[in-house]
Length: 106
Image (cartoon, rainbow, N blue to C red; front, side, top):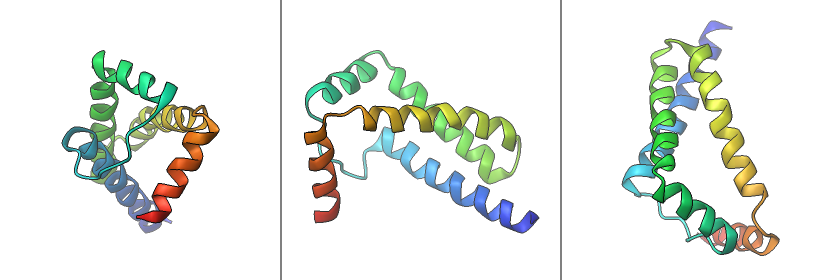
């Protein structure tokens, strides 16, 4: 069971590291948000809270990949996952349809 959990931690850490770096470097292009989602993301960006969230995501991903303080890293990543899921689910239905279409078109 130990090798399985180590590989899962490394893969999860790599996933969060890539998307955390994308939060700062913007190397994966996403369609711009619209409507209320754009206002919400604009508020997060202007208050610098988005940088804190992405930085926390990157720190926890490094902890997961190093296999150090794994319970702490998972505990800190839980709210990040919940935040992104809630913000995606509260988007308007037209935004969700647009995102699903553009995701499959690329």
